[in-house]
Image 1 (spheres, rainbow, N blue to C red):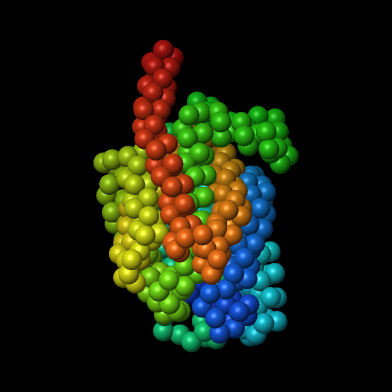
Image 2: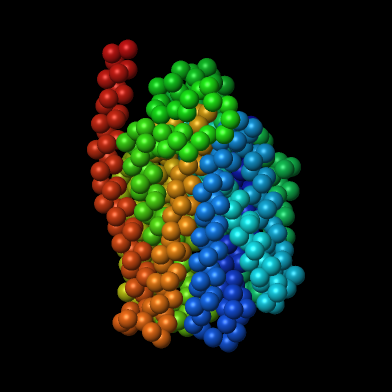
Length: 448
């Protein structure tokens, strides 16, 4: 029951954190446009500002996230989770005070700094916390539930922003972010990286004390592992060895890179593309994001927990990537203002992708490596977030300008779709690799 209470408190913290973070997204585009290019619907400066922010944030997160994940394996999840939850308050507080040009650029710098510590870090620590308390066979459903709670925060924050004026939006978001930090420190039980239940015999949703005795022996059979004598921070070669030590982990890392590259390409271009192509404003952005969030929440809270035990994470990954390809391509070829709303519904499938990848990774590392393994995957996603803006920002600005080579405003989004398509093709090899690995492990057990 104590573990159940810990997960419940984690879900509350995750909900509040994402509520505050996503609540401001519909308003930030208009604030950025007003600060950089007042009175205009097309602005290359605003696109480049957003792209530069994403690139610098991703570069910092690439370094910080694996380190924070590794530290959480040694010093506990709660202590390290306090960092991103607290740092996220500052940018929201700045725009809560004012949205003039000066306030915007102060926010811009603070957001970059905060993003280094929040981009990927919070999610990877939450995943590691869940892995500490949930058995391997039900971990895919548990990860999906965590993503569903995050999506619920996304939906609630976006819905709230839909009916609030811009000034109140940032004030409420800052207050909720403070509440998340206080709740974390007051109620979340701590958990290190050494309590995970790795033995499939201990498969209840929440581990019990009987699992602890079998964890050490089970972990020895998982591959790869960091050298046990290393007490300091892991080097880049250690992280590479961890991710390339098995087909499952190397495949998950490759899929994460290409899918995240497509995701970040879409995020870089989408809102500015919709504003230029169909004249979307804050309320229409909120409506679209509501559909995205509601579809993701429905998928991860209801559909994925039902399908995960039946299909397995490998098949869910393939289905999710196929839905993700359709989702992005429909945005790129949208011929009317309602098509993006229809495309957003495919998130009900693409929402399978990240929980499935994280489950695959979690099952292939030891209990004392959950933090660093999830941090490495988050770091790969962050690396894609560096390349995404560098590639898609100039491409988006070019095709939304008056000097475009041909009339196709969604061309950069279409290119992002091809990145997700590559991830889908790679995923088709994953079930066979997984099956052969499982068979090899079974044979080794029988011989032993």
